Length: 290
Image (cartoon, rainbow, N blue to C red):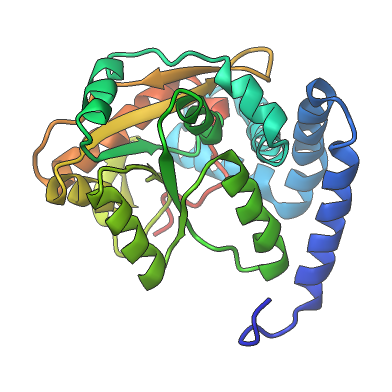
């Protein structure tokens, strides 16, 4: 915590509790720890934090015709996937080794390799779906150095080990802010590969469509791609039925156009995948908040 941040006991206590839980879970074999933290997240954390209610509210607004039993399934499965995603990130080498075994597939693989060989900048776009870190780890294991942009957490104690866990999967990581953005642009202009998530509401974003509803969406990925002639590539990690492995999907590149049209294509790409696997997207976000 820096000197400009006031001490908050609730932040400190939450971080101490989380550190204890993580320490205990990391003592377990990987194949037990991942589903266990998924269960804790789904059955304990989500009801306390109100995440299950938020999932229901989002589904009622966006997919109102879902049968009640499907709503209940997604309500439990979403926080389970969130918990698995978190403990996988903190599992470091074990998670990386497992992700490295997943060979990427998809129509964009050839374009990815060609741009990489030519030293052309690449912007890899994904969403809070499956485990986005698995896609990054799988590509890093195949020789791609992929940077990432993140928003520092409000809790400084949590943020300290959260960033360290992300950096354990791959560097460089760039914090949102003037300095981080400057470093990110320099990295991209030098032919770097940058991973971005675009599926959270951005106050100053464009009014685009997601699931047929207006969703404020950042245009930055498309704008950077146009400005620096970067390949714009949708990439996803789809969690398999065993809950531990992933299908890494590299979709065809988004063709140049207006930033709005390119970003809408990214929204449409993610929406199509979420419709196939609704339990794997983070419905806990306030994506359509007015």
